[in-house]
Image 1 (cartoon, rainbow, N blue to C red):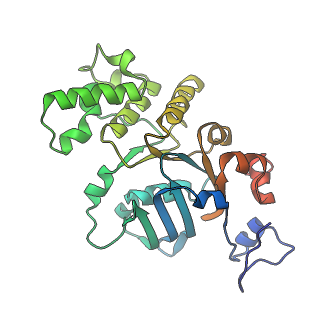
Image 2 (cartoon, one colour):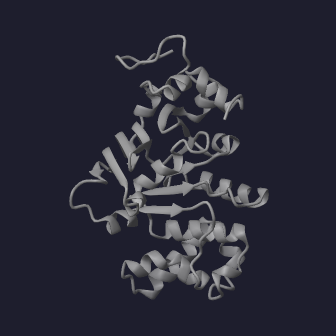
Image 3 (cartoon, rainbow, N blue to C red):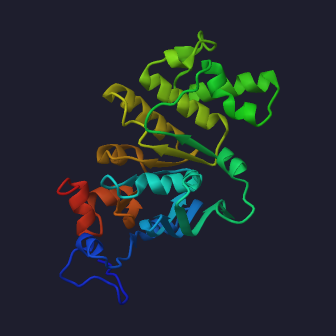
Length: 287
């Protein structure tokens, strides 16, 4: 079992999580197989502060291309904070300060001169609660094309149908495309938001607990969609539901108090993790 090194490493008799609570530095354990994957996103030694309070600590995570990567951990561990750093949503908070690097297809996300609007076009984002725009189903889906200046009606209609089919929503709404999206059920609204996200053909799909406001049937449909999107899209999903992570993801990262604890293939994280702390969390013994 890998052990941390350095002057701030935890004493041998203290668990990694206790060591973190006491302010010690603890190295992340990243399975070697992660590094064998082609990276779409590369998070390198990333730190974030809200004012004087540090929320992310030296997070390093390569995100595989065309795969589904889940981030799990207790509430307040930094899962959503890290996700929102990828498309720079935390820029909107005045007190935020960051250090480290994130690369999307080897290009810096935080480099000087980066056009944040153009950056966000490369990422589709789906939030915890469905957030359809107060407009028609059709206009919701093709919104990314509208803001990109696409005017060809045939292209717009083709993308709308393709995105709705990709979100398993086409058969439900094909005869009501010009009705308000607000008339859809919660699960349909979330699938509509997913259709809107993929309509722009993003490099990465960011899903922030997309099923937390849905019933079990709607949750199952979203999980099926996520599994179908692998290969065509690189998906980074934050979930508080460990069973969901085990069902939908190829890789899983376990975070605790802003630190990456262990990261590897989902099957290994859930059945033979390298750390006893990871095993304790995924088996429900804490958290």
